[in-house]
Image (cartoon, rainbow, N blue to C red; front, side, top):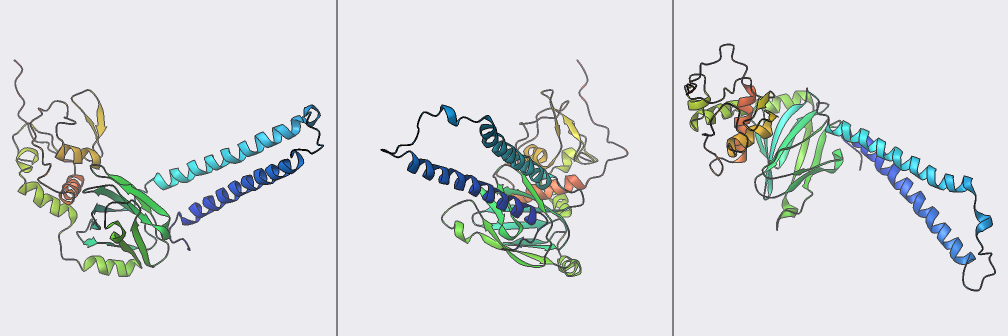
Length: 313
């Protein structure tokens, strides 16, 4: 199958190199095994003393050459892994929620899809994925990409499609009785056609949906600009370091925000009381993604609000 992403050729090259190397080793061991089995079979007159067969050059060759080859493969794989894991800053963010047995896709502009993903050709795409129930695995053979999708955790992957067309999407992790039905398609379009497709949606952007939820759930009562409750100001928070009450520091990324919404007592910000209620079992993963997108969109407030701080006793 011809590769259709920026990493497909690299993955194919490594795969065939490993097949060739392992095939050579298998052939060498098999031929040696057969030759020695015939030469030293029971009843043969072969010399079995062994001492005069020792040769330092031969021993160094069969030890060092395979070692260098396999270390080279290891270094090659590390470089490819780093390339796959390094997310381009200009990549378009798309959120994916997996559940038995479908893929639900949420674009930043508000468009939603089920079991399909529209993307422009030649543009890097970053997928942030989570599962609403069990472990799934996002697998697109034509792109040579596969990433586990886990409950209660975000995983990310990126790729750049290099060919237009439709490509099959599978779940590569057995996830239940209808696992085989959990499949979809990736539609890669020319940028102009993709822009028309994206503009055809009439829904609010993901951040706007999150803002509506933020008010609906009462979050603005504590974290809003006019709040008088001693709670962290969320403006400009995303991506910044957050000191915690246990003395450690975390980065306010998507995972931290998700935990703060669903498991607020897990990581309490330093200087703030542990009073935030949990929203676990009240909102689903799509709502969490929308809230995260809204918080991520908040610019730093040039006039931070004055918080009520308990007077020292």
